Length: 196
Image 1: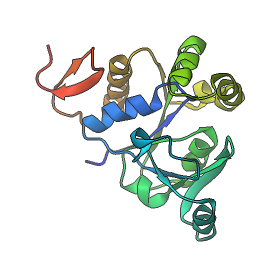
Image 2 (image 1 turned 180 degrees about the vertical axis):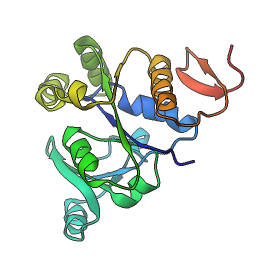
Image 3 (image 1 turned 90 degrees about the vertical axis):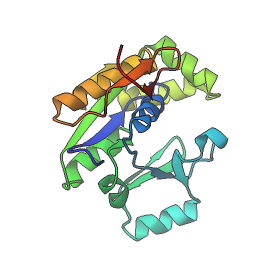
Image 4 (image 1 turned 120 degrees about the vertical axis):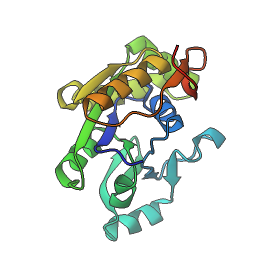
């Protein structure tokens, strides 16, 4: 199912974008997969991006394949029109969101900003093995614009709460919601069943 709107998820590293997207995908929503030159972090990272070399990425830029592309923390990231046309959501950074808003005219675009406390960001980044301090410093100036440009802000607390907030916003935007799902707090993800 393709939504009426294309939803952009933006927020700093560790804010919960990938976890929220995983919950949305379990409900049947699709994610546009970005291309990147950054190394794959391991088996859990497969499918998160189309991992390509700098040479292939450069060729795609020259061929006009990307609606937008950017360098971030030493790596290239880009999104294609085809991925956006065939998806409901995409995780992007601020510059990418601005470019998509300006160039993408195939359907309306809505931005969901995801923010978290500094303690939560640091803890999440350390858990996944990132250099938390440098990553947070790099993100601070980049993602200060999130509250000003987002159509809706989720203050990330738990995967379940974040998912319910995203679904609520989508409903306000006129989207048809998936069948009633039971959310299990211990898993933080939806499972088929009836709401209790």
